[in-house]
Length: 605
Image 1 (cartoon, rainbow, N blue to C red):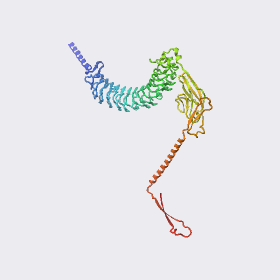
Image 2: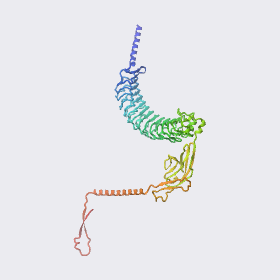
Image 3: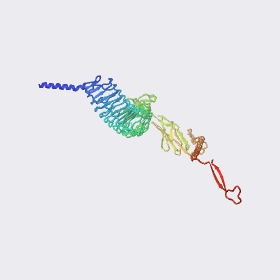
Image 4: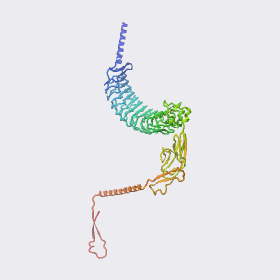
């Protein structure tokens, strides 16, 4: 009997065991189930609704790539164990409130590529354990206030590739744990600083394919924990405000495929913690001196396909920890060692796909060609012709100083230029030099100020090296020094200028252009100075006529005012009468004087 009872208990336990696994083992028709993972996959089954027969213990439910059009209230409440739910690539246009009720364990919800136009507040109510939400590639036009307020543990949010035109000020309220946000391919024309400022724990922000024209001051304020910011494919972006990144502690910044034409130097100065910087595929032609001087922690700099034509001396000054520099696919003819703060920290260099001129300016790369990493794409010579197409790391040491040489600048015409000019005239000094590579020309003023082609003000250097001084003043007098320089050295040349007061007879001929020569200079390098008086006879006559017309107009206007005033004073008599009497005189009284009084009548005009 005891054995019979024991056998009965074992049989009962077996039955209970079978009953307990039956729900887990069950699988809806046309779906694939993995019992040990508690996963049900029903993708590409042309389903129009959630199928029946899904085990209640299911943790992973994949209903993507079907034809589901609507999510009804309570439709998923029978699966409280769900952790991942995928409705991607359906035709969902409507989600009723309570569609996700009772899913307290849900961590991942994917609604990508549907037909959603609006998600009302409260649709994600009680999804307190949700960590990833993907609503990208829908037709959502606006993110409403408090739309995500119940998702307090959400860490990753994808809202890109929608028809977004506006993000409400409090749309991101409640997302206190959000770490990663992606907004892309939308119709946004500006960024709401108020809405982004509510994401104070955000670490990664990706903004791609937007039509925004300007990154404004403090667009990202209060994002103190943000370490990666990606601005990509903003084809309308032309400017970045100086304080756009103020307050950020970024370590990685990507500004790629935009229309900015210069390195945003002022904006970058606030990013002292930056380690990775990518400015690739922007129409930036020059890296100026000190462009990154505040980025002392920067280790990687990418400027691929940026239309670069020159990297100026000390352009990379301040980058004490630079490890990787990628300047491939540009228009650089050279990259001089003087551009760096130090090349000793450099480990990887990419300057391939550039028209490099192999001369002494690239000798520093050759000297390090065995230790530098070119990432499998070594730089190649475009000129001179005899070594065109040769990779730099292939040159033996014996020929380095045969090809990689430079010629020191030499100023061709050294005849002394002494110019005497009158105040207000334009003065020019020539300075032409030859050398290999082509020397750059700059001038030093008598006040020891450097004058280049980029100088602002009355003095500048023209493309041929000529110094031009517009509207000469007395303080411009003195000795000017021309400096022609290249990688092999420099050459200097002097010129003097004396500025006097205006000529006494200059007023007699206002339309005449004066040509002044320095007759003390007997060389063939005569310098001519031109001046043209702007107040000619025609200008004087026109000015006088305009003044007269203005005066007559004012007089006429005053008469009109008087006429209107007089007419507004009411009715007046145009005639009045008066009496007068003559003073009595001695002598007889005439007949006409009898009576003593006379009357008269007057008419006002």
